[in-house]
Image (cartoon, rainbow over all chains, first blue to last red; front, side):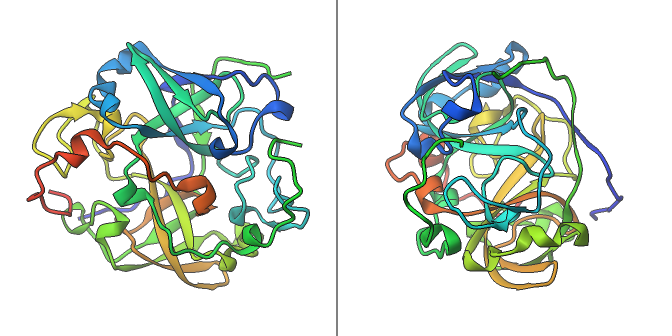
Length: 160
Length: 160
């Protein structure tokens, strides 16, 4: 049986670091689909065996810690719109738990270094997890997308 | 400019709890696509304003803490195959940072309670984040899926 104990603090530890060409927020794309940039995902060598068979996948989900964020606000203007929305209906990086997810394409894996295309994080972002992208699990096409669909499309595709 | 300081421990705090009909691992589906079950995502009331406009989206990404896991192994047999693979090429819950992601469909939002379809987590799972599912960001269709494509398809779709 599952038992529940109230958890107040969860400790996580970086398993690697993401190297990217973006040295400041102002030059960082807001999503991988707006980026064709190459990055390098360095997985700490003690986790090397975890990468076995990853080269069979074309895309991976990077899960990482937004470490250049500020305090979150529950009502925010997302980067792609000029209206205020609830934080959890946006992908804004300032969140109670600043966890980011990015789907990127594997270009090459060499030892503990994964070269990827479509990187959208600031250089030296702490890596928390890697999962294989599997369309059977991860694709939903029949969707509604609220404010995003009706947004102001003149907005820039990088951080303001 | 971005500054980097080596981070050893990252602290996270649950922002809510996921209620599901699954009281043990053995009855829990391994992915939302294998589940038509209804669950209830309880967001702690102090985060209520973060849910504004979320009802415009049909699907959300739940990010949560696998709190019924064991120590991870870097080489594992995933639930859907009978061969050993590197942990990061699987979606196995025993991970260095046991972060889970599930895409679920919103049925209804009432105050701080989000009723969702396609739940695949054990009852009382700590919630870390909610993001809107946006196909422009989250769908990749031209993919390779390595061992998953070639897996033994007779495997059960719940935890063993």
